Length: 157
Image 1 (cartoon, rainbow, N blue to C red):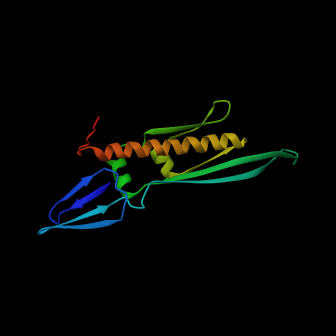
Image 2: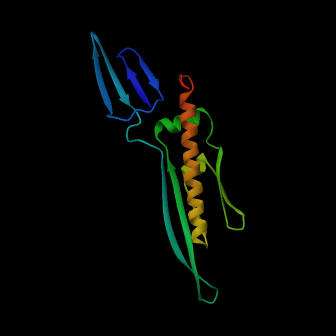
């Protein structure tokens, strides 16, 4: 997203703008500034992988457990959109055990608060990590759509 500032009025566009944080343009007596408001600031999914030894009741070695800890950090703009459109409780991901039993149903709010899952299979941990990544990609797209309301998009064919 970028903001075109004329000094008196700001115009916002959700078009992709890769470049410096701010560009100033002089046209006759008019001076314009284009500010790249998302430069370097993005939603973050923070994942930590861990493991622990499984010990049986008699103290015998039973293999390993795999721990997936996660949390999402939103930019202030993203948080404002989520609040404005009341999507904090929207379910965006379901993580499961290999047998199909549900571990967690994740909402935007639960991902922001963070969580931890413990599974007995490394493939399940990696599959659930992918579920969380895909959920964040989908939520990012949803945020971009919400931010585009009130703007105009042109499609050429």
